[in-house]
Image (cartoon, rainbow, N blue to C red; front, side, top):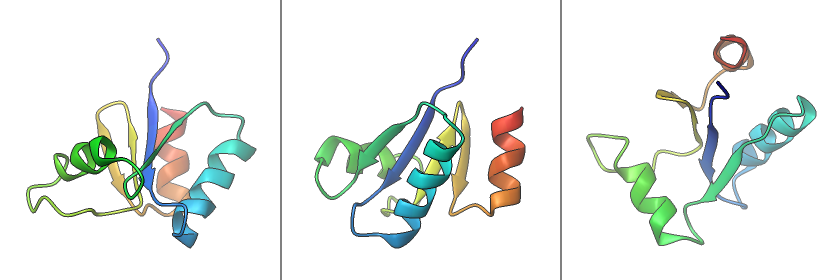
Length: 80
């Protein structure tokens, strides 16, 4: 079963751009959800957090939520 990867962020965010490159370099399929350009993406991100803030970049791997993860943590969850 293939796990869905989503990256919530913005085109202007350097960390979001870093994760886009990281995931692309690993040849992983992922959905990029721009929380500035799309209200539905912003709502989806807000719903992940109790404080309802736009905490980006956030990566979800299946049901796991990673807020601005280190390379080590991201790699660990990708390999699971």
